[in-house]
Image (cartoon, rainbow, N blue to C red; front, side, top):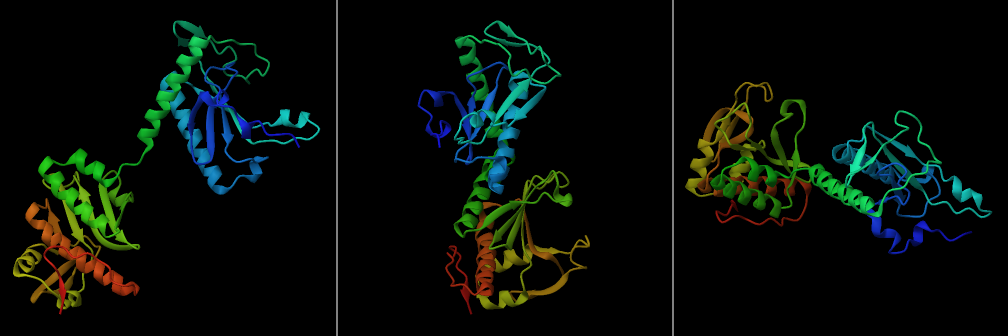
Length: 334
């Protein structure tokens, strides 16, 4: 079996690398018969498409999305031709194929590099495998840099925003400080954030904060239907029994009573529930026990307290050893 050239590329051969993922590497092809032609090479040695893993297929989809989007944006590509042939490997008596794909962007309009015009004369038809075509070294370098920069921009734009990004983007500086401190507190407890893209919250900035897939709280940022509320925190449903278990100071109790979320008859909680919250009775409490609009610095001890209690109860429910960090207001079991 012959040595695999793709597994043993020299440094000189690798200098035209454009981007890579966990499974694939993209190179600007030596032959630029079609401007921007690339070769996409699987990182591991593999003989055929049928041998790809599910993850490698998904990773290839991401590479395809990135390349087609970048070439459309930077060079005006109208479509892309993809091929995976492997024929040349089988001209050998002992073929040793290494899976790779060819990407040929196609252009209706001429491409101009350093004042030189390149025309896709076969546009709208099958590419010509025997096409004789030359590109100057200066134009090749210019092409490489333009594609490289476009891929970097595309990669940055494709990164999903984190909740911290929205906080910095949407909130005022004093609001950012409070919100980021609260987010850090949640993350310190291994709480993760999931943006809700369901129909109800589509095109809104709404996050679930979860511990081991159990909800701890919800956070909305600049809900267009509530313009006066820059950001809002809701607790999840907190049982009356929980409040009986923990001693908190009077300030926390008074904040809790003022932030009880009464049912707005949205249909989500069947008219609300009756709850005893640290000795005070409330009727028609929403499925989200507490709601805090535009939290201020002085609200952080209360927010941290309800997080502590919820996390403690989740850990107890999961039967795990309790290893939570208690906030400076300190909750104590009775």
